[in-house]
Image 1 (tube, rainbow, N blue to C red):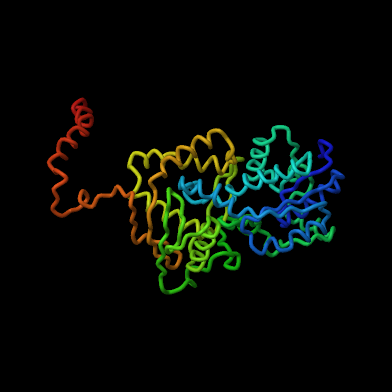
Image 2: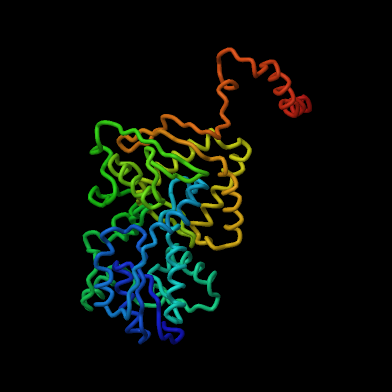
Length: 401
């Protein structure tokens, strides 16, 4: 149901089934101009036909902005400094991209004097929340059109029929009807045959990684250099953020690393099955945890670790631009001041194993930790330490007696 009259809409346009149909639907339903905006955040070949398809479908103008470096530097880096992971498995690839897309979309709306923005997120999913919380954080008065909450096209099969009737070229087929989202950090798959959590994902679905069984029979050893919590070099070669993640993706993909099949809890309240490929991010997080193990104070680490679920939840739910997120990020970044050094890893058939770590800011002391003879630690001191920590336990037992 159409609510407000609009003159010009900026649509977050991927060129996929949903947004291709939405572009035409907006024009027909609102009798308005539509500007299509696509953020290049590492989709690869998916963007090749975006401008042509958008113009052919009726877009007044098309923006395709290269945001790969911004995405990795300003969104992925901060999250990985926090070791962010949702429900112990999801590395937040889609969640981290949405606030960046929404931010640039709002900037374009201002440039083009558009009075509304639109997205292709469904009324059941998380993305509608992520987009719209970001929109409102930047302009509390912006008009938002969410077609999935308005139209009578109730399934992706309906959308495919609409696309065929209007001559819209889309990549989705009835044989492979799952929805995908790809960027430099990951690719996700949802819907279609994946909606049965018992059914194994088809082998030909995977896009970024080889099967671990088909990976090389010999392991590959790499080194990642960190500076204040961020990766800056691979095997001694300094790289930009996006270039480094691309290189890690190539390494992880070759060795079948980063496949995850999970059932997660959406913000709106339902469970959803998703399959993800995050090759470079998986290697990166393992390496980051390894360098932290020799450079971060125990109590600082324990406090930071206690915040990972909350931080990850804020990202997943769409509160990237919230005041609580800014507070958490500031604290997280403070913990990373000494997190510098090199981690050596072995990549082999779906696994990433830490072989070594070293740092000039290391607080690991071999002379304290050794099992050999030492002169810096008095083992007798442990007796008083233990007795003091056991005092309350002893009192509890005495009271029972």
